[in-house]
Picture 1: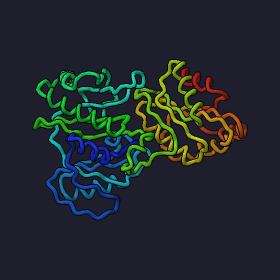
Picture 2: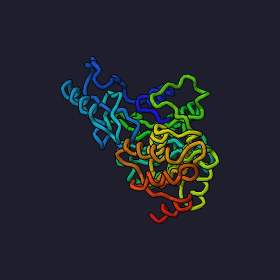
Picture 3: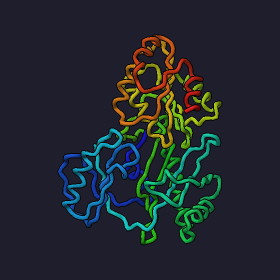
Picture 4: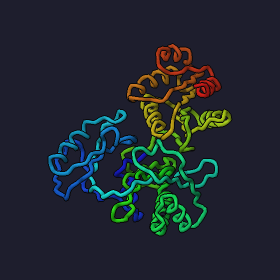
Amino acid sequence: MKLLEYEAKRILRKYDIPTPTEVALVSPGEKYEIDPPYPLVIKSQVPVGGRGKAGGVLLAKDRPSLEEAINKITNTRIQNYLPNKILIEKALDIDRELYLSLTINSTTVAIDVLAHPSGGIEVESQDNFSTLNTDRPFSVIGESLAEIYHLESHAFALAELIENLYRCFINNDMTLLEINPLILTKQGNLVAGDCKVILDDNALFRHPDWNFEDKPANKNFVYLDPEGKVATIANGAGLAMATVDAIKSANLSPANFLDLGGKTTTDDVIKSLSLVTQLPNIEAIIVNVFGGIVRCDDVASAIIQAKKHFEYLPKLYVRLSGTGSKEAFAILGDEDLVLCPDLSVCIQGIQHG
């Protein structure tokens, strides 16, 4: 379950993690009374990245420019999403933008810290990210971060920040907590300028208070590898696990485990594609479905309808076998995707680009 930025920041504040001051949260068309000190930052609340480049983050220096920014963001579609909420925050005096995230290492099943001295909208073009494990005292991690960021005078503040982030991550069953940018203000403060959080849907039973805009999907989704390039969608836990294992055996990197469950509707396929396209480094998606109770031609029709909801999708490799598979291949024949008679053909297609 991916949180919107305002939802994520409200959790961070409970753990004494500094964020910009939230001035207002408004819905498109809603009347609002805002007369704070300017400038303000106006941010589209949609569950995808790339908002800055797409015009979803704007600066307002006065009331007219605030109204103009809200109107523009209301009508700006970002990767097929229009915002239901718009976040308005006080602007910060920015000195530097850094990158910091916590994620689960699928190999060690531990929490890793990723850091880079350059954050912001171009962070995906950076390399040489530093990875720190969390089996050391927070004071030591803070010193390492200070060295990475060239902020030796902030070692104590970084240690306190990472300890609070770690508690936040654990207590809220997160699978990803990304702060980009982590802002160093001209006053010398560290502030979470933007925040991306993914929660583990399977932990819902531990959190009866969870009431976020992205409701948990009726499927088993596990985030495996933040660097993974191949997303997977399958029906049945056994088939989903076999798909992940086959990808790893081919020396490819599976990003996730996703079990559609016993029935597959168009809405299920749309939600599944929404989940996997939010993963940061996806280059291909394997859809692996065995038709039994679920008919393959129904899945094929759902895939066609789901594709209409996305402006862009990574290359789809589709393997449908079982009840209705012949009809499914006929339905998908004219679509821009790769139809595979078995899983090995999907994997070979990805390997050979």
